[in-house]
Image 1: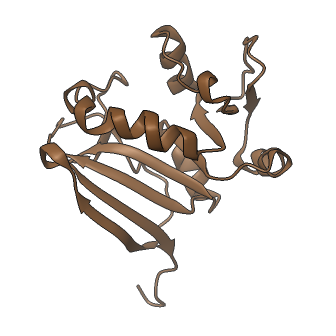
Image 2: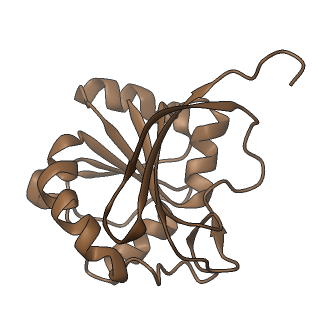
Length: 179
């Protein structure tokens, strides 16, 4: 199952125009214990776009090693990484056999916007897990960038978390005819 999990502002942005997440630190009390104790141990692989990958490396933030989680980075330029658990790929269709070979259970599609959109266009997102934070950025990188296909979504889960954060899980469904 490929899970597109994102913290999203109320106005639909996953990051500001510079790709930074100015709202994330304010919600660490909501997300950090769950992230370390529940989420990371539950995933079999991580998929990142190159820009997100480079941000993590520049910030020296890489939580995936301690859980031995294979990471796949979507890029057309290749990677200069000595880490054994990091693999580059260009197109979503290339990744499916690699994930199958790993026997990867839940796969986190972590971003960024272009990478998520390419998986959405390929019809490979099984569930959208959105954590709506009660903030507005006004502009930035949208959770649904232009060029994604239209589709209906079925609500699977809705919960209120601390600090006014809403957890919403959706699965894609086909649009009804004539919609």
